[in-house]
Amino acid sequence: MADTSGQAKTAAEPRGELVIRTLAMPADTNPNGDIFGGWVLGQMDIAGGTFCAGRARGRVATVGVESMSFHHPVRVGDVLCCYVELLRVGRSSMTTNIEAWVLRRSSGERVRVTEGRFSYVAIDDNGRPRPVPAQ
Image 1 (cartoon, helix red, strand yellow):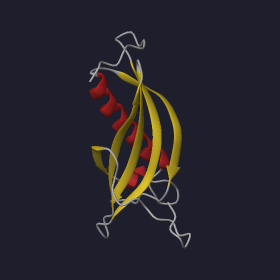
Image 2 (cartoon, helix red, strand yellow; image 1 turned 30 degrees about the vertical axis):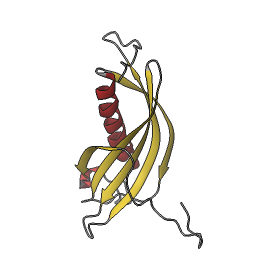
Image 3 (cartoon, helix red, strand yellow; image 1 turned 90 degrees about the horizontal axis):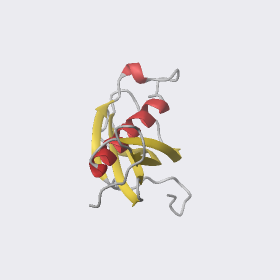
Image 4 (cartoon, helix red, strand yellow; image 1 turned 135 degrees about the horizontal axis):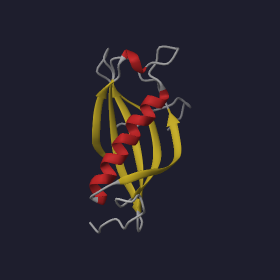
């Protein structure tokens, strides 16, 4: 989002259901000392998979990350919170929007740091697609 001055603005409230909260630790940093983007992506995928497994009432597999936007760095000591919003349910697939927000250790401020669109497919015990049950 941009305001009329052209300055970046973060969304005021997370969209979706809070699925996980975890602490960013020193072992998760990149060479610059910020939390590695791959770690954040992994946490978002865990949140999306957990959410969709509940909706599908069984196993799911990640089939795609259609978009990712990194807005702000995650710092050691931040609490990372992943919110999942279900956008679409197909026969066997689900599309989600996942937002990652942090609670800054230093200030307690809540900041949206990353967002992405992830797709999952419900699978059976043999790894084959199966229908997502009706709600």
